[in-house]
Image (tube, rainbow, N blue to C red; front, side, top):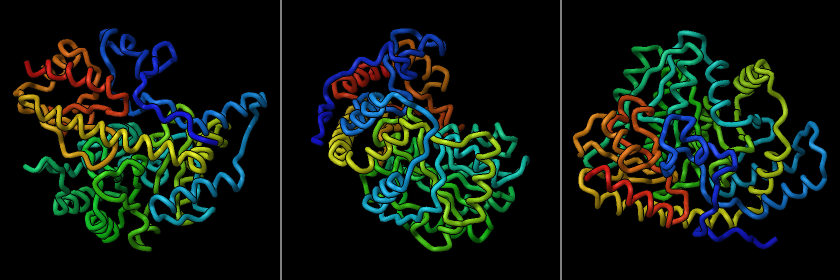
Length: 391
């Protein structure tokens, strides 16, 4: 069917729709009139092919227990091979209701209470939560922000932290959220070799892989056969096609022993089948959503460049070079404010709801994260408000 939802400029009113992004400010202690650019979902209608698939199921009218057939795997596998040269096999697939859920299950499956789990802060804050909430030790090898406005990995520190803390598991964010890095094959190889040498399992969150701008995304498991056997690859259509509320993610585990442990932990949580709407949406996205994806990809790329140029024009602010994702990481340290003062200006002076850098770890203090996946007019309004924090 022809794609009908290629108008990304029109503002869709999301208020009053149980939207976490738009309807929860007051409940979370913020002023009602803040403009939200925080949580990572889009303000665009998803592909019309997805809407049509869901509408057909609604017309059917029965929503019993559901299990995807082989066509579901074919759709997911086809997307991974076409877009990321990642050839997966049917037994590797472990279906979960979301990446954060899968990360928590992996922490429990592959480590014991008190074990050390390594991250690279500033990093997506649920990484820290699933570690600490499960009584594991959080260890960070912080990324280094260079004078060129781009994050780098301190490989010596990375290995030192593993050895000193007897790290068992590494949570890799690939592409990196919030730093925007699309890791090079060489960088991923160095990380993987260090982890192999010290028997550290790699869990790679690759949910943002379809928004890589600087270079092609490299799936960690594709680099070496040894990496494939020592990794868990987590993917989902939710960021790419704006399907977060439908709760579906696809985890690939080539190593049968690791897969058995992960499935056992998921089973112990009481989780079994995906919801039917998530199944149908993912299948439609990966088989019929190409035109919509190409359109939204270009729109977001243009929005990102617009936002970078605008942020860099504001005294005291600078944009960290975005190589991927639709999340812009803004360095506000030039304003000379404390983290608390910065948050207060963002919320109460600019009337913006952003993700404060402090939640991404100590290395995130002085930064703010902005979601640019919205109509240009909305982005313009937000950036005009952002200028107020420098006044």
